[in-house]
Image 1 (cartoon, rainbow, N blue to C red):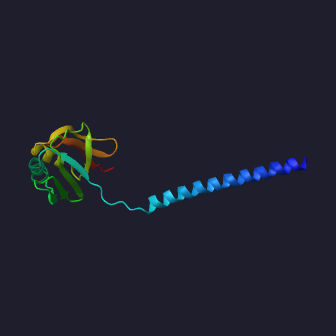
Image 2 (image 1 turned 90 degrees about the horizontal axis):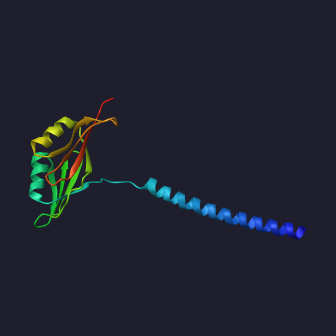
Image 3 (image 1 turned 135 degrees about the vertical axis):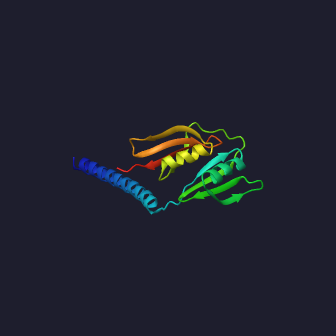
Length: 158
């Protein structure tokens, strides 16, 4: 009987040690992932809009919406970086581009009504008119000359 108890105890201790090592290994992996995620800094992220005609896109975004070209690449130009205030937008020449039926970028502004008027003035197609949303934004959606939909929002004061 004593032999059976000792054998069972030994087996239980070995099983406990094995479970403990497994739990410890899992905890270490979780800690490594957590440390990686919390220690990593994110830089900027910029939308890349496909355009069928770079000249048309430049007229709309630079001449119409007031962006500044900060970089271009290719001959003919196939890629451009545009900036205005805190916003950065990349244009990529894609002659066979078919626009998505949903917004592909979100632009936060301090005056949605002024942006709406600017978009209309420069020929943007208004997809959704200006509305105050229950999530705290005055918002609208427009499509650029290539059909790219951009959701525009202004924070509402509470």
